[in-house]
Image (cartoon, rainbow, N blue to C red; front, side):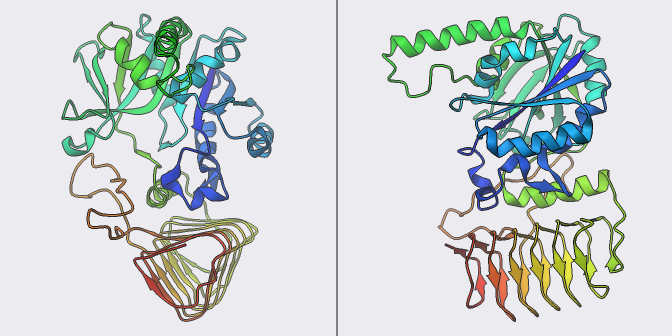
Length: 412
């Protein structure tokens, strides 16, 4: 028997995903029509041996309850949400709920970061793990460019055995182009190693009279567990070529949307003109003269009127796009409205197509001289864009009624 653990963080994380995470927690943000972590759940369910999925985070139980019960019904598998009493970091939550993970004595467990998107090769990773009985952890790794690798966890592995000899999280200088994808298979024995790391943390906390800030139960999986284990022949890495990306900023949601639509193509039943790949929720109404796609997801209850053109965008539940509006490289928030003949446009932030292994550049909002970096346009929940306006590379916070056109601005 196997289990899977998905780490989703909490409301104080995912700040770069705002304003999208103001009304929907980031792990539940719909990408290609499904909440972000439903893609993880769907991948885990494909393994027959996987009998239980645990979701760990510091969101309130009420926030997650509806989603968890929907998933249980849909996938007929035990799914539970375990709420941390305070944010405990990537390792602290795992260690705190160790008894829940060990219950039923699983052979091993999968550990997945909630903010990654991928064509998850879990079967492959499990087969690789079984071949190395001495492994406490098997990491799914992928290639990055030399420049970008330093923004991730970098590892060096022994070429013949695939044993990880060196691991550094977000190094200051180049170490290797093999990066950690945030997907692991772990042996239950890992909790002994974590107990030692936990003990060290406790000692440090009490010797400093509790002055060093973090909660004594706070533990980083990457820095406190992976890094010390590298070079002990207990951590192995499987390099995969499957598509993989992180969802850190709102711009990366559009990029992830494109790939998930490609991986799981659906054929919308609406009569409008479609350029694949497109996902349209069955309850959305789309006028037959609208042109939708490529890379568009349209949520429940959305209304799209005559002559509308939408491409490379996500339109969330109950939004309305009025006649002849143009929407591209944009996320339209829940219950937002785009007026007729308006143009709402952003700038894509896709990886460089000319560089093999290039990843998303999750650039900061502002550049060095204080101006807004070009990014996708985001309309928060309930935003109203009046008729015949232009909105370019702008971020509009929820419930704003715009009165004019905007370019390169954040509208607070």
